[in-house]
Length: 503
Image (cartoon, rainbow, N blue to C red):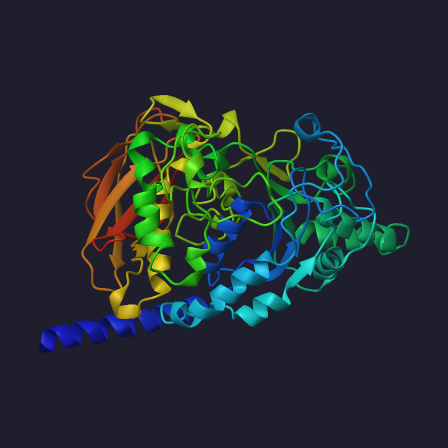
């Protein structure tokens, strides 16, 4: 009994010390712009369960090629985007979900936020998050003619004196962001202040966009603000989107299917996750007549396949905030490294733009082929188990829920190595719950400039060796990931990365 009590006290002390250390660290700042599609709702719910990991500074309703309110005057609108134009032709409004769904979700979040806060510091109150909700440019797809509450809010953030990066997540169109930038240009573009203002805004702004969902980036932002940093995800998000059955390896489908989703996330975890849209759940989003996924009579031979109750529908926008969660992969400063938000490569034509596509495809061991979605897909099992753990945080106290291990390297994260040499790699980890831990080292081949295989010793121990091939030249790099997983379900994984550079 004394041993058990001592272990519990040690775990509590370890947890408090770790959380206090984390609370001192600077969290990435972010603003979310969203068109309110059902997958935005599901992304928003997951994001709230991780809202302690970053500093949310704005929640802005915007429009897109798929969702706009209309001007209330019966004005006919036709899309600039070919697909939407062909599908819908002229419309006065399109599948508009309204400007209250975020508030509704925050009402549910208010009921679980106190319990979430038992597990980690930093979960914002629902009242604070509600105060950040603004309505942006929503009348039509790509509308950026007028200033709105949302665009003015973003403008103010871009002009403030905080020079730390501001990650603007674009879950719909870029039009409200474009309007904010246009207002800055209108105010300062012909003044002597313009060079400094332009540099200030461009230096701090990072747009994480999921596809181009209107033409305002191409027509305005890229032309007038070419120095704004852009992370563009057009392929990798599919493993978390509607067509996931095609993008995700079949053995991992179970993490998105109804048995896992229903038991571990949607049901029995209080009101927030119960509002998560899934197949056959009987829910229907107001304003979107194409949201039929909750109808249990329409599960067979649906648009994206045949489904069961509580199967995952889509969270196509989640990579934008998953990129901000620090799990030890160093991807925030290096989007080319890869992490829970995918992996992006610097554009050959614009040094301020990072993109996915064929040049950052990863090898999918399940198909034996290079796969443009796999840089995101490879983390799916860990993502879903972590999501289930966060759902448990909504209803359980610290003792009765799982928490991720804390992992560190016993040496520098970057090591200089020579061809043919053998180097020892060593890491260690502790678990807040006292769980047993498993270690696994693996080479992330696609990220390094050296595309061959390096030789690892025993990969399943805390310490291992790596032997560099004879053709590992000066300047070559290889990335080795230490992956540590705990033994309590839902099993949680954290990482450390070692970058080997040839000398």
